[in-house]
Image 1 (cartoon, helix red, strand yellow):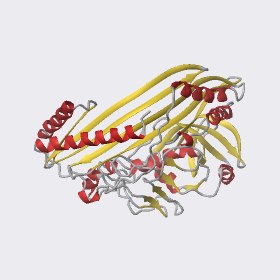
Image 2 (cartoon, one colour):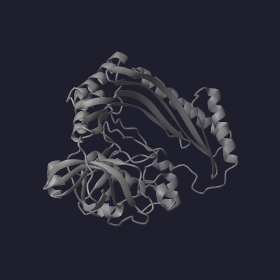
Image 3 (tube, one colour):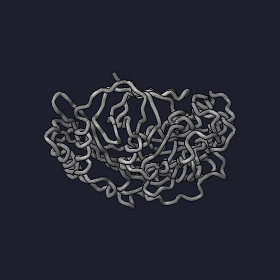
Length: 447
């Protein structure tokens, strides 16, 4: 694993590669250019039924450049970082630009928006892990899952991964910035049996620093406990009831919101939230915000993919849509400034309420708690929502039994407006943070 000195040297080398690219683009007559380069290395191991299944060392390089001749642009990429390959990549991008049409929105972000300094967001924590140690941790995780209960009869295995990388971006405004990152993860999935009922479930943990990962034993035990809870699942009759999306499943609803307010969806007019800026789309207690400078955040970044300084902001405040999510190009297409979201949203979270999961179940009374979704039945233009699901039937505020082979259906605009409560039960790792969502009413299709 790289030392701090090695990392600084690699960062300087990649920054020099960016500067060489930009110099070559200018020499070839480009009026502007931007480039990004990344280098990563990692280790992944997986263990199944106590035996090592895979050990994989990874090392990847990738570089891309976009050149502009006025409002004509061309892009090219390579995984070869040799000087000759860099020159060839610039030449390829210039040739492509010769054959493209003028696009008035094909340009760099304004120079005044560039990140003037790169704050330390504490994103780099390499894990000097030997292969034998990695195998031992993954095996301990799976052993904990398999040993929790005799009804755990099989395993899909446990996997451990550790990665470090450096990403550098620069453009012809004179901006060149980069920083190292790390990411580590551990996951486990097992199969349980009770009579004729076979069920599978999993758990995982992910963090920038190994010290922030959940213990291997806890990951395995939680995977097993989730599997055991699903044994004996049955179908239910078709009904219209309140639905509780368990916290880790509710992240998908937040991602649907993000997709609907991304600039690409808006200027292509493929969003059910088109022309909704400034309108109420959630109840007034809802606040959803982005925190790109969160220390050790899994999606933290000091600048976006256009080099623009990132800033915290509310997407939803008092239930009202405050902003779209725009990069330089989509902002231009919409006649709006960039929101520093080239490359996506970074560390999204919703303000959580006071109820724990048990409190949310009592609030719901009778209905469905969803713990798994299947399929991709979301229409981005209309917001119509239909997904295969599994979970638990709830009566009197208490879980009665697991359910499966059902479909839940509604419309995202109606679901957002019908959000009754957000729990404080966020108990998973990830860059999208939320408690469970209690939705007023949805159609549950069963028998």
